[in-house]
Length: 315
Image 1 (cartoon, rainbow, N blue to C red):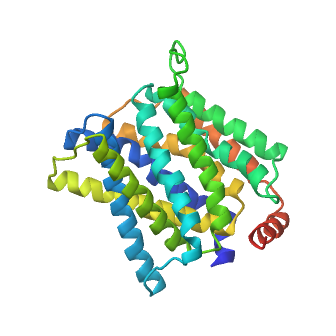
Image 2: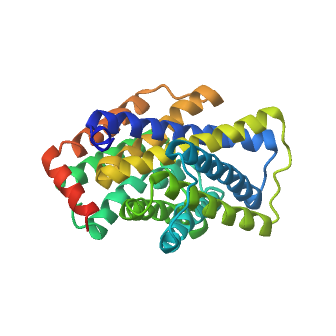
């Protein structure tokens, strides 16, 4: 299992699958808002809480099935998993939904897509074996340039920088980027399914409480909206579980850099599901930038990567 998950082709395919699933969440959230008549920050956070709590339940059930046991986390690991849930699920999505309500979608997408770069920079300072290199740096710049290009509109971005808008999205990005490195650092303490299930359940329960305190309401359920909610929960289960497995056996940089493709998938799937116009030279050029960044970051010596990964896991 470990050697297979360290194969560059397997990493690429699984990481892109995760990013495609996460990318599909953008149009699905918009469709969910319409079908469930969700309005206001409290209702949006409550909707997120329901989605991720269901995802946590599905992850727990899937983990029990795959590992043929009841998933139990060790008592001494409760603190770090609780921290992971607060940072990766609660703080990230509270900041994201507040920020997105006070800024444009383009600016929010650009800032949010930089979480891969945050992960690589954070790993440089938090994990001794994952130092920044010129290839990683240049690859991240190319990937970020692609994300900027795909979101660029005539006349620029406009506006300015507001704490409740761009500032909150930036905090969301930082929270996710740092949580990715922390996830790597605790990945040997429990099985990936155990960590994913419990951190999602903890973080989503806090989201639900926050949504209730803000008088949120998600009250329109039909078979279509219920199916959509189930799909969104399932995509989170599959994506987070695969992502955790990849982080367990590979350097953060090799996995996190694929996060640049999430907004690309989001744009493509928005065109398909929401009927948005997406085919242009701008989008093709952005895909080339992102692909170039991914290729550059992954052109590291395989032997050195394996030695560094073993070293980081044995600290």
